[in-house]
Length: 281
Image (cartoon, rainbow, N blue to C red; front, side, top):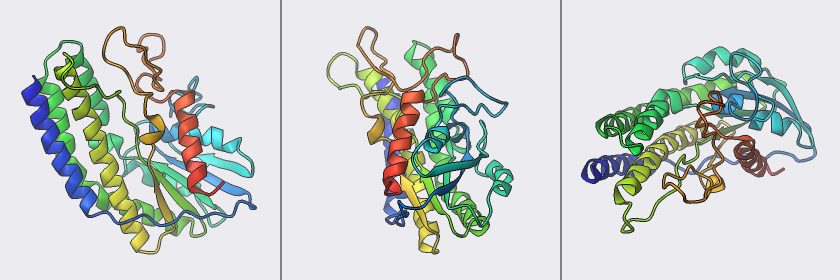
């Protein structure tokens, strides 16, 4: 199993390197701290806040997602949250009517569904529990193959957002690592390789998002990429039984199926903090 996962990891790492090599530094997201942000949230389940509390609607929006938490920040006014669970890059186009010239801040989290991150989580969770490893490796390989195709449509979407909301700062977030890294050479090498491969697939997605942001920024869009990997460090799901952990992800598919493998309220608080920092607030 280790050889399979290490081979998949090597392929993902190569893809991450190629994507990152073409990504320039994102544009500044400077925002006046004295003005009230007229804010609209767009994106997928993370933008909707799924896992941050009880779902409020069919899109799995919650009162604990980062959009709702930003609404509680000083001088922040959430006008609309158009994000919806399951949304792809193409699907966010249907959310753009939420924007107008009065919008001054837009957040966007999207790309995981385009890359099949949920399939990776499902297949690799089964592998971690002793199931077959081939579906996990195949899902990672498929994600790697799809990642280079993300920057173009995502960059176009960011441009469309800027056209709808020309006075807005657009903050595009990445995704956190789901799993806590494990050390090699301590009897858990197979699990360590699995964790590294899954997290590296997320890195490939984040590199594609960052490349799209850099492209849009080069076209004059006021846009910034926000990395949340560091904010979640030490709070991923721990795969070694009996090892203490403090995951910022839902881990109970029976009692909390909507929040399973999505950030908790604490995880969305981390998102909120890094977004506010990016805006200079």
